[in-house]
Image 1 (cartoon, one colour):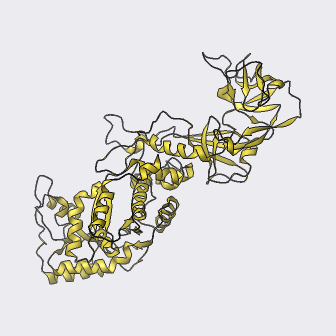
Image 2 (cartoon, one colour; image 1 turned 120 degrees about the vertical axis):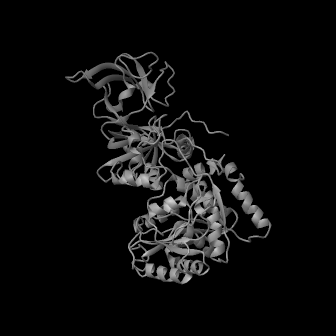
Image 3 (cartoon, rainbow, N blue to C red; image 1 turned 60 degrees about the vertical axis):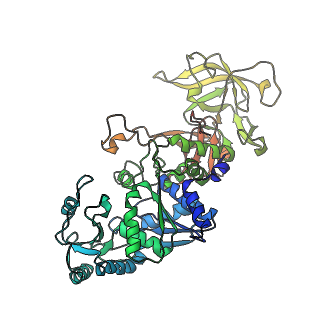
Length: 555
């Protein structure tokens, strides 16, 4: 199915085909331009897959570029994390660039605009600039500093560069049209003062270009043919084109907008994700409940599943909301063929087979994969004392309950029939152990046909099983209910997003397990070995996704 989706067309692809066929371009160049002010999330994955995929399909070039024009929020930590995430996801870049490497060129282009009478130094503060800008229904009014002479503007801008003014004391604005119906064209700020050391240029600069000025220049310098961005930049396109034209750039990129990814129960704001980290709602950017690439990876998502998801949702010009279960669908589809089967008991209850020989251990053959017999079998130890899931026993069974209860018989997967004969309770009346008898004639694979049972349950051998911690996740964010819009998003935090259980896992299947290895724990879901908390003394598993879902992918 995913191969069919990969070959499907979309409006961006059609534009590229038209540009190539017309001779406008003989080779396309795309880019992924993150700001290094946080870790990448699933929304960025869509852009990485789209831009790198188009470059690969049309035998073009794909760049990774850091839009590092705001030193106040940026850090080398984020630069390195972005490199790692893009590489892991398969977005293999041809070249890597930093916007900050173009600061000299941007400064020269700003001087060019001043000399052309298309930029001026303004002394209005931020609040005053907003007031002068007007609104969607009211035109803006000109700054009292708009008509400074070219010579005066050149002098003031140089003094800004030399650090003579405080942050916010002056800005450089493009001189366009204060009555334009597009507010972005009403003399936007193109340079501001920031006495902050930059992660790349250190203390060379104390003035920095604004995104709307820097971005089109970066694209033009790199020869980007198709500058693909999300819909919120559609109203910025006239300014993008104005900068390219008036800065007299040789290469003229084409900006194309598509709908960004929005998912249920998912925060797609780096600012909000950073807040979750800073306020220790989560234990870092790589918390498995986070929608970050590193969080999804630690949870156990594969790059193939993420790429298939991004391809399947496609690109459009209309915003929509994607069900987060769709992402779960693709990881489930991917792991069903890859993850070996194993038995794990997350909420253990001891089961003692009273008529099984004490001290005896036999090795039983059990399939390595739930649905693929070609994966072979493994030998699993079986003895008198086992652990089963607590939910697989009920002292007073409800209707249509076919697992263990007093007097009932079930099959232990890959082993024997057992019948519950006694229930052991503690002083509080809690069931702590159940006793059973087994029928040695009913061994799996023996061909026994004497009688049938309705229930089969999994187990682990108490003598050899390894202790493990199991981390089960639910959505971190609960979507707004009607009437709750505008509330602090922290009020939407799910208090039950993490459930930590102590249980056991069969030794045979996980003996050589290492971080990020995946398993299908029978009836409990797909799990991965946690890369952060697993040690030689302690095994920690994250549940990637449950085995089944009611979600159906639209064909």
